[in-house]
View 1 (cartoon, rainbow, N blue to C red):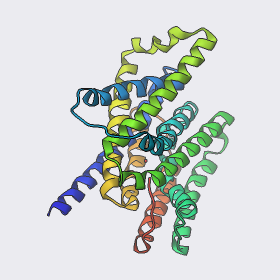
View 2: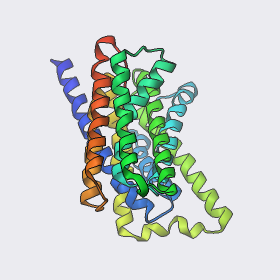
View 3: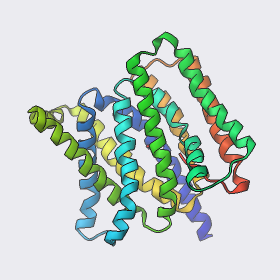
View 4: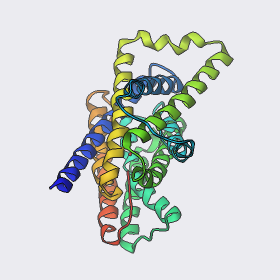
Length: 311
């Protein structure tokens, strides 16, 4: 009964994670329209690190990690949040949140590829066909976009693809670490890494250009503060905890199925709240991607293959 209850909690965490990540594209898009992407990341991780460190400083939560443990976890933090969120934020400057959600749906496919390379996991012919189906969905969207695809938008798409690949790498690296360390330990270290890198980068940029006042200027906008709170608390701190907890009790392939709910949520929110253009081909492409991802995951379960998706 305890095992059944634990897995039920893990499934609940996976669903909550998907919902939070699905909405995060909307808030990232809002913030990068108001401030430089590096400042957004600096503010986001400074706030999330501060909040998560309070119970640690007060002794409510114990973090017992050696220097050797830190060196094992730091590479995880460099993949996500550092590279994952940096590519995502800069990519959203010239792309919209709907497209970001669709591209994010390919994370399980990239994870399967990376797992086969670095973890030596084999894929079946059926899995490769489903993988091709997902890739076809992305290509279909941008072919249909036609003349609407500008050079700037193309750069945004490339950055979003790099972001997705980084998170796929995170999924491959995170799975064994979740078996050794507690979710809070992984969350705390990765957030500190993100906070350090992003704030150092933002301050160096402002100091070199003599615009240090611009670092705090966005705080005067209440809409920015509201979006920042969501990104820092829910989309960064809580989602990392939920993902780490779910991956502790669920196979990565099962986690990936739930995280693809974020694609549908991001498309709906982008169209409804930001009034971003969503055409029929967006939905057709999204269906192809999700069908390919689900097929890739489900056709490999009997063979014990690992596939994962993250936001």
